[in-house]
Image (cartoon, rainbow, N blue to C red; front, side, top):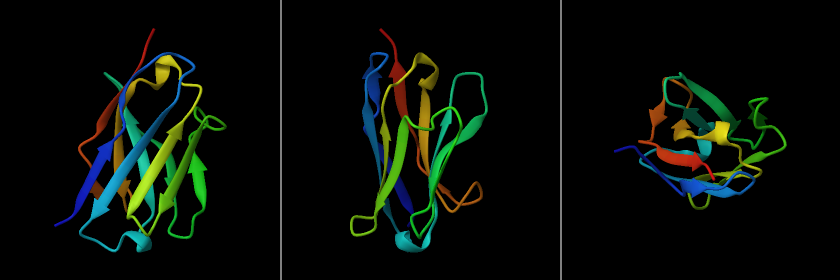
Length: 114
């Protein structure tokens, strides 16, 4: 059974940092491209960052130089380090394996507010 379990969300002040984790199980993690998406209230779900099985990364323009995606294939986990957070980063963040037609986690809420 495929599972993607996100953790690390919460409330943070503008300019702060959070690290999201996504623990994967039930599939060959190291073979899959992994991604983080987010959905803000009233908006569509958008790709934030992605990492291929080989470790190549890609980012939405809005988070470049602030967010870093990484993976640990020994732990079947993908991470999203988020720095210099802004109120507009407030959203539910979802872990994804294999693209939009792949597997999804249930999401973790990140709220950036003073």
